[in-house]
Length: 363
Image 1 (spheres, rainbow, N blue to C red):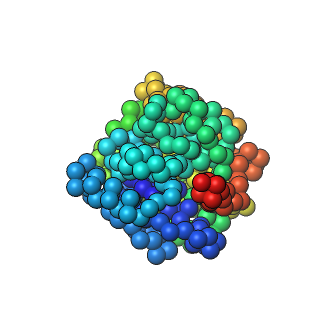
Image 2 (tube, rainbow, N blue to C red; image 1 turned 90 degrees about the vertical axis):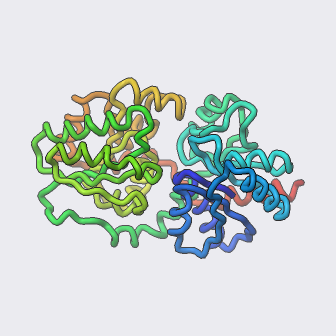
């Protein structure tokens, strides 16, 4: 198993944790780098892992090849990431040479990272049927996609109470708390949409507090967002990039993001909470962010928002209207849409485990 990006680290870690929770026999080696290290270190389970500090070095490649071959791996579960020079891609090449079957748990609809054309895993484990179509388009190949649901969100039911107890309170119930879930500033359109969100928050002249959560891979660019917040005059706080997202999401009257998987996290929290926890807005203002969406997942919209699991704002006016609506007249529409449309599978880990077991036994 490998992971570099936080999203894949959460999925692969959840798979391991759930196997332990269900007493499913699993012998594994987990190779991680970058933001994935802190994710795995935060596990409540005793998860052993190997930190690959410099996967681009020949010594790291030689070491990884030797260990995978010596381990006699029957299957590889790799991570997804933006970069093509990390541990995920390195392990992919090694497993190909060793004829080890390869799969990826997709944590984002249709997202294939750097895998496309001839450089693809053998299988994708995806959350829903719509992801299959997008994955085929983005990978430029009809890779087998197995609809399993999300191991990461499967474990929410076990941690929900702890996260509710860890919620952050702003100290003033009259102040509307907005949590903005950041994404890497290098991604086109992200900073522009954050600036437009802050301008809208200023324009509506309502008492708000913005709690900004930086992306784990973007800590070095935090000053970009802090500068915008300071100049706005709005009450704000900045969470640590390594802070758990779920208690923050549960703390919010409103969650705002561009197209972070935190939006889907919020929907799963809403599903398991059983009572209204707030609302969700996705931002896609301007051509840059739309181009980014098309590049990342193949479409310029967010499928979940299309069925009412969040409000999708493509213009400044639409954002202003949405902010005022959810601040002044909150209702249960979002909660009801989540209950109606969210695909909650109660056995993603068992499905993935069963698939791998059957593949191994049939070979």
